[in-house]
Image (cartoon, rainbow over all chains, first blue to last red; front, top):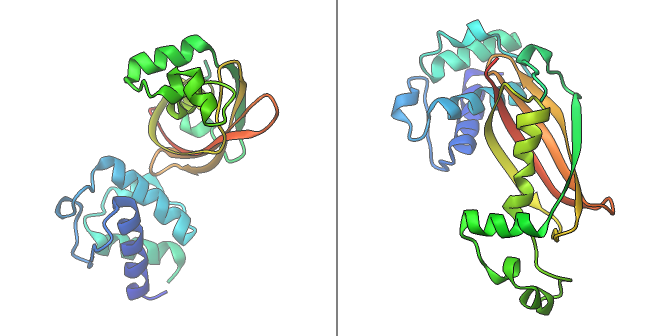
Length: 81
Length: 138
């Protein structure tokens, strides 16, 4: 999987969880800048990512996530990409 | 009341219970919610639409998912995050419902489990299905 493919899939997940059909994200996108990305939405986003990418995150892996770019890099590490 | 923690939960773990829907429940839900639509309060109105009598509110029926999560699966340490329910058949006062749920996904990092839940009537017919998202406080 390429970074572009992962970003596209994460964007799709965010659009679905947040119900924002026109949301466009980049590596620099952060939760506070996206309408509705609160703590509950973040939980649902994490679970959706686990299902979509077929991975399981450890609690410690999520603490340092600051933006979508960090999420992309984490998925790359977990999937061996 | 069960007291499953996140560590206790795994895919496939299931629980169920039965509940009788009474006239008093339907009256009480109408009073509590303010939904006094005649479908729920007027037998003649409901019968004119082809029902044998008044129909229990859909969210009264789905309210039993709260019982499932809060008492049985996972029980004490539950925090309900979300309910995505579909109502397949009407429920009437006097119906006996079986409410069941099975853990379909466990996320340790998110401290959330997903439960596939179903409610059937005394004839074994599915009246409601739902996907439940439940957080764990322990």
